[in-house]
Image 1 (cartoon, chains in turn brown, purple):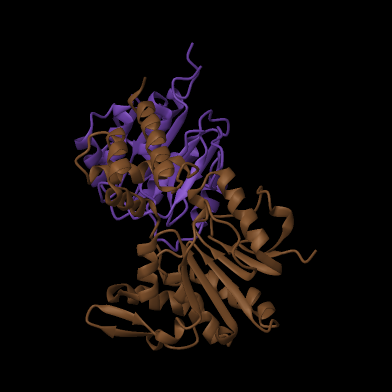
Image 2 (cartoon, each protein chain N blue to C red):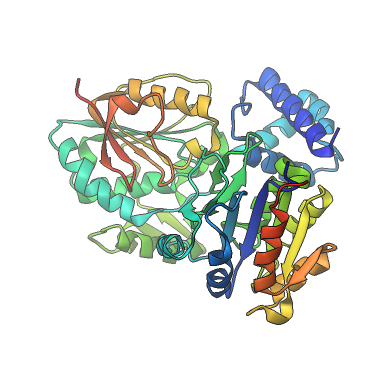
Length: 275
Length: 191
């Protein structure tokens, strides 16, 4: 048997061990990138084979959690894909403004940069005080970073540029305080945000919401898991509620395609049909 | 039966000029899928895809996630995403950390191609100013695939081909025109 195929078996067994022992389920992740992540993790240990990681995660809880932490995707930035935020301002928010209150679910928020981006847009559009934002992720340490809202100052230059391209109406410096090498996000942005643990792979609907952000999460899942999560979103949204995906993610060919209409095909904004 | 089932290519600095010479040389019925990773600015639009689609006999498109690989189609990795190949020979995307300061990274594509296609993949590293593609080409060789590098003497920026040659024993070192001819020859049916 080819070494690569042996390794595939090892990965399979390893992910099964993680799931059965801790309930974290990566078995339906797209295989090529989870394989890279596992090998990346393994390279930082002294273990020679992926199968050597199995007893390690079964008997060493801290070790297992460092693996789980490593497998969650934490690459994000403020106003990632600036034009998307313009489209949200112009195509989704005017409809949501007609509601007395709005509930928003930011699923897979990682370290929170895009949660603060949305909070800024809501403030500028005069919607923030009516909004409740649930920002969820399965990675507790990422959530802790998100809650603190403290980011490296060196990233702010890029974020400022993104903010301007995203149709920002003020100075981006109004939204953070610089201290040493850090940018601390303005407290008022956090007021209506609840950061909470939720695992899209294993958890269910927790509230009816009017807007869901889930960007660049589905690309990591296989087709079956994508459909499970999209059904979860469709069931969580109120009629006329919006679903916003990453720029390379689509409802086309998915199980829930019929339940949504396309609001912006390029920016991947969908609205749940009212009937 | 064909000896090879897939061509993967990586270009960086000087890449657009090189691709303008190489890509139009493929016939519309080229029997293998071709995937190209080109290092571009993250906000680069799909201008190049449109341009090459007009200039080439092949169908040229930006890769979509979960898309099956088909012969006669040339797939570009979208800017700011890594492009990978799944065991069922469909494409997947990721926003994982940059590799060799690059997203998309040539190594990421090549390594996943080697794992899935093993002896059936041809990897091509062309002009560029960093060492992305070197580890990927080594993986392709390790798994029994074919390694092709643009002759550094003919490359606009020779560093990337040189880095690939230093990383593994390359099967063919050729100028662009000959790379096209070789890829057409290697795609033939085995008699």
